[in-house]
Image (tube, rainbow, N blue to C red; front, side, top):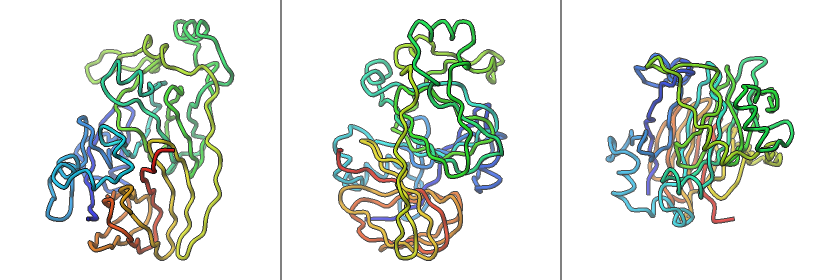
Length: 321
């Protein structure tokens, strides 16, 4: 069993900024670094093993070499690697969009749907995001407002602050607003249906594609479901707060003051995304980390220790709920 550091894949979408390079040390030649795909087996941007004897393999190749037991028994119910973890730097507004559920996505797109959660790593003063509707509307009103560009009159804009958490179930209308840096944990999918894009054009000078008819099929025309607030738990050397737990992922934010004794048992791998600080992960293997690093701990590694002073997002897969 192993502890490995991963190198992300990058995306240079037009709304991106430079904070992932400037503040998080990402090595990327793009002018704009909109997203870093920190834990990914997706064909559109796989992460790569950066340490150990398997350095240079994609994460998918690593799993194929060592067997699916490195993912744990909780992942056996999924046909493919279940999640994708990103850092997202929204210098400008993202499009108003929606993601389908598994049934629709697998039937129409041939991949998973997308339920996701956002952790606000940082944001500008006054930043907002779009999260569902102010109130329930009809399909007819939805179609009419898309056609006459009045959709934003009935969407729910939410002021955001560092540390805020948003759970976005498949079908929830949403958009990250400008000036927000987010850690996103999501199903392993790249299917997005844009509904409104502020009239922007892509690199080819043409308006970016919209997916209005598909969006009409899958959008839940109601306020977003709120994930219940959970308390901070204190342990020796660190605190832990559950951010979201669902069929696809369970995610915590850890504030480590000295060290945290954790475990990756046989049921699931663990992934650490380092948002602040530096330190070392040890458990047989030893890997040092700094702000922006992503550490993958294979299932069955057993107890491991995160030493240092840092903030990290810990993600695992729980047995089916």
